[in-house]
Image (cartoon, rainbow over all chains, first blue to last red; front, side, top):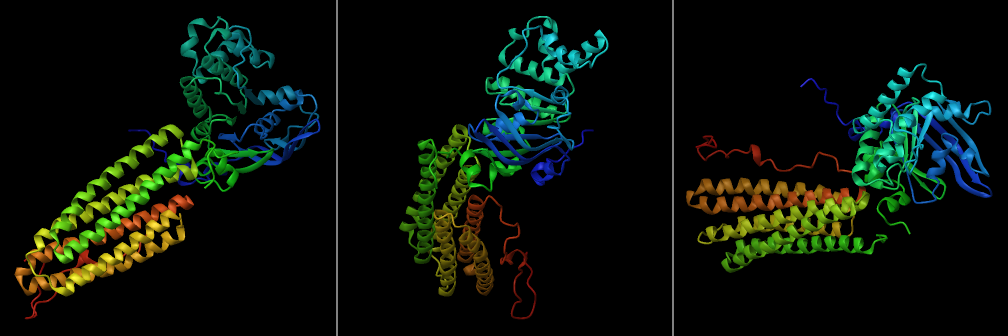
Length: 271
Length: 246
């Protein structure tokens, strides 16, 4: 019985998660797609090494906000981002900032698993290679194995690393994408509905993985499943019609939210 | 309460709330009738109370099953979750109240051959009125989800405790006066204790109503007026202390 019993601090002190240092901060973030405004002055802090869940009905701006965090909105024609977003206090919209480097620090996993049409090995090795993170072949091998292990996929694929990544099951492909995201040692991982295309077992595996990744990474997840947000996150932020409605410790948000819109949304009353 | 997108969800919630209200009415009747059976030594009435309690037990099981099914099916959140968990708790408190009432009814046969001092009977009658008022108040608080009313129910429990303490003391005195009173007085003592417990269950329900409405737990320290746990026999006439295990 050497194991230290750590009390579930978040239950006893629901604000404990807020006490963490802030990894990313959005201040008065606005987004326009052409003439249409999609986000209205959102202020949100993302605490370090916690899972922050963004919830809200479709079109509420949660994915838009997520995509601002690694400047994925830059790739959308007509999208304009206002306000300020910082990573460790640095403005990520600074014109002198290298966006490729930013996206290495703030990785992303998408809704549909999108492995490259390459081998499992090359899928994971791609990032470290282009970012020059590995000098030798053995370095690359080590990164690939470690990343696959961390993503909980290594045991399942270790005998077929050179088969196509697209040949894996949906859940395995998603974990491959997570392995690919963590291979470049990001600090923040953004997940846009990472389980919506997965069956319950694959979902459970990804959720388990998210919980482990929290030890080393800051995670922001957009999800349509309220139960998933309740299970995996420490902080939940509720969006509606482009506004941040309420943000708080997940326990509180799902047991006794302050805002009527949050209450209506999570209990299935939204019209 | 606003409507859910899924209408059958609303219906299920309403059904559970209705079950609780009905159970509340039944529990009230059981307590009322068991006390009047005790006071009037009415055997027939006592028997029908015992039969009624079975209905309350069945209703509690029904609420439990429905609530568990809803949790499995709907994965309720926030207010809805509290409603359902609250229903489980309240139905179990009401079921216990029914049991306590039934227990009083069962004692009617044991005390009916003994003449009971009229003052004691009045005391128990009054105690049961207090408990029934509490029960009625808390059921109203539930029906209107009124947390302030629930709070005042909890405050009032002290009065029942104080009344129970005084009955306890009186019963001890009667038993000492004449050992032939012991059988009847012991049963009356248990009846009084049961009524006091009914008040405690009303307090539990008040706490649950408060939780359902606010999402907060009431603070831990309940008002306490029951001091019988440390009470010893009064002094005898010749001034000699009588200790409890004599």
